[in-house]
Image (cartoon, rainbow, N blue to C red):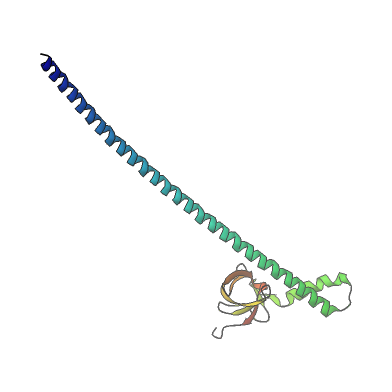
Length: 184
């Protein structure tokens, strides 16, 4: 009898052990799935963050590039204005001789406008060479350099020129036509 009872307890404990083994295998599989899910989620988060950071970096580079371009154009324009003022001052002082300072200001404006004429349609042209056209060679006093006309916007009296690798938008009055294209 004791043997039978012992055998029965043994079978019950064996079944219980098998049940616990099955449960532990299921839990182990669940843990592996959860771990894989966590790892995949972490990878996806890193990729998403990386993509967002890259997008912001592109936007920041674009903004910096635009601001740098604006700064460069304004610095060139400022330099040109200063050089023009210095040239006008030297020109007016050289042409006038010893005259009172009160009469020098009106003559400066006359000298500035003497090489520029406004046509009936409102376009400003240079008496020396006319309105530059695309492909014309112009002198940019602000840069102290020659440039080639790339684009003209007569409605704004602006011209886009290229001097080497640099492209600039300037007013027509800020360029002097040197050489026009031969085929017009």
